[in-house]
Each structure stands twice: as structure tokens, then as C-alpha cells.
Length: 425
Ligand SMILES: [Zn+2]
Picture 1 (cartoon, rainbow, N blue to C red):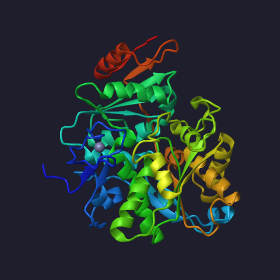
Picture 2 (picture 1 turned 135 degrees about the vertical axis):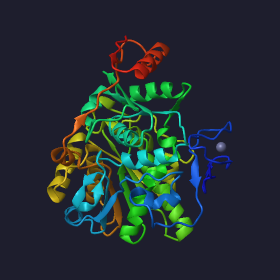
Picture 3 (picture 1 turned 60 degrees about the horizontal axis):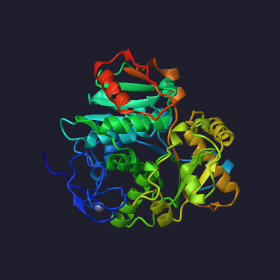
């Protein structure tokens, strides 16, 4: 195997690592930190299409030829309605006229393809927790490239998992009846520590963040320079951190100017990052959100190289909007552009709208708004879609902690066997 041209570095102790394709954390005994990639300065964008156009700055050992890429376009009429003449949009989803071809409808496809490109040959079974979008992206990509994976989702997310064709048997889905995103995270964490299995790692996986960083690389090309501001809805913050890291790389290697101010947007009434940033107490539950994938209770907030560091370094901010405002923003986008967007993207648009009205962003600022998902309804209208069948359904008990050791062992036994219903609790 050829040695990759990049290395991993710990932002706290500055220890360097050769990448084995799986490493998620520094092994030194110190406070929590996110490993970063360090690439050679030279970057060429010719050659591979889609996301892998940026492969020189992706932590990958292989190129997946069918990967899509974000589309970047001036906001035009939407910018006029918001009074923001310098507004640009990055759109990740299915919108053929705009050049966006991500069939599962969200920027999670950028993450999934980069994570698969990073894996070693003969990888362990990848375990991924998801509120729906990440599972859709990994299911499609793992199925296409025959990578074994176990995906854990709340049963409420199952309608979200519809595909243009049946999934390969290498994709195993566990649905949690009565479970939420946090239960999926807990079970996936336990499964990922079993021999032969590997937690995908979420925000701790450098491939996720750098895959999402291509949003900034694509915008830098399309806009002819660095945006001054960047707005995105966040759960763990992986996308915003990836964009920030890509901006630092451009600034360092290509004299691109200062990185954008990062504005992270969350969905009230459950907004853990907003709560920690502003000190406002929480007032609602993660079951009350129009965009439940933003309900990550343990984002890497105080982690070295994480959310607070990024906000402080860029002079950024965290904004939060309620369900009604997000739903109105979804309708506004569809009215202007004729394409549906995900509720989480509506959260980001509503937050930007409120920031503009309050004069928190200058009217002439060059702003990049990340529409992190869209076109799912359009795709379903234009294609025959097949629902995914869970290999296992687990009932999450209300009267005890989940998962117990017993839950984990039964889940993995059932996943390996497939097609049987387990009831616990
Ligand atoms: Zn370290």
C-alpha cells in the first residue's frame, strides 16, 4: 500500500500520525481534541469529477467515481428579498438544473463518499448512527461500493430511507422503535467497540470534516474568492468545522484571505450549541424539532479544534430559530427557486433572514449560505423509490437505560442473522 501524501496531527500536543484510514483520536493522555489533516500545499483540481476533484485535500486512498459535488450559485432573487446583495448559495442535494446530483438529497453524501475513500482495504464493518440523512447517504454509498456497514436509526426516520433501487445485502439497518437520535448514537457506540466492527466516528472522522470542507473549496472557485460569512445549520458542527479547516488551508497555502465568520444555526426549542454559546437555558426536548438531526446532545463544543475554538477564531456566532420560522423559510426557498429543501436548511435560511433583519450582517457582505439538503421530494417524484427494510427492529424501553449489554449482544446477533424482530424492555 502506498503511503498517503497527508498526515494527521493533534491540535493539542502536536503529535503526528500516519493515517491507517480508521484513526479517530490522539492516543496521548490529555483533554479531548479533534485530529486534523495536514496536506502538501500543492493542490490541483483537474482529473476526477464530483467531490474527488478536490482529492489532493481529501484524506483518501481511492476515488469513488460516481460521487457528486455541491453546486454553488448566486442567490439572485433570494438575496434581493433578504436585502443581501452578496449572498451565494451552496446547494447539496438533487437539483439537476443547478448542477446538483446528490440522489439521497443531503450533504451527507459528501461525507459518506470521503469516509469510504479513506477506509483501508479489507475494512472492519462500519457502524454509523443517524437521525436519517446520514444513514441514507451511507446506505446508498456502501451499497454501491459493497462496503459492509451497520446503520442505526430511530424508527421514525425509516420513511426518510427510500432509494432508487434495492440495497445490497452488505448494508444492515437497525431501527429503534420509540428511540431517538441519542439512542441510535448510544447503540452505535456500543456496537462499534465490538471486535470486527468500527465506529465511523462522526465529527471525529477527519474524512467527514474534509469531505464537507469541499463546500468551501467549491464556493471559493465559484465566487472567485473567500466569503466573509458562512451560515449553516449544525448538529455536531462537522460541516462548519470542515469549512473552517478548508478555509484555513486556503489561507495558508493560497493566500486566499481570512476565513469566513462561521455562523452556526440551530433549531429551538432544543439547541445545545446555542445554549452553551449564549448561556440561555434549554426550554424544550429533542422530540419537538422540525429538524431532529440537529439534536446532537454532545457536540464537540469545548474540544480542542472543536466548536468553541472555531467560533472564537472566526468571530462567529450561534443563532437559533423555531419550527415555524424554519418552515416559512423552506416555503420561501421553494417559491423563489422551485425546489424543495430540508427543514434543517430552512433553519439556516431563517437564521440568516433574522440576522439580516437585525442588521447583524452588513448588507453588502459576501455570504455563503449552505443549503445542506434539498430536492428529495423532487427526486421521489421523478423516480421509482424503494423503502429500505430494517434487518432488526429494537424497542427502546422507557423504564431503564438503553442499551444494556444484553441489548447490544442481541442487536448484533440479530443483525448478523437478519430479518427477525427483537422486543426488549
Ligand atoms: Zn494529542
